[in-house]
Image (cartoon, rainbow, N blue to C red; front, side):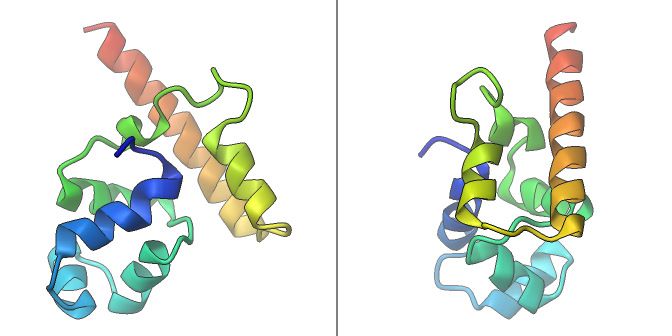
Length: 110
């Protein structure tokens, strides 16, 4: 399954398997309600996203490969699906994209 913000919830569900949401959240280092929200499609804040990526064994940048290079980016799909994102969500997503692009740029220079 290609990695994107839209597939993050499915990756969490796949990784935790039959484990409870509470057990998985404890492994991630976040609250169970937060993990449940992300698994159900909500965009996490940057710190939570980083913890989830570490638990998944994925680079945060891998969720943004190709963002901005296709006519319809992952971010634009998210904002259309959520007709009125909160200001905090928009800011967190923007910061996430900036950091992911910086990480990709750093990786391409090594």
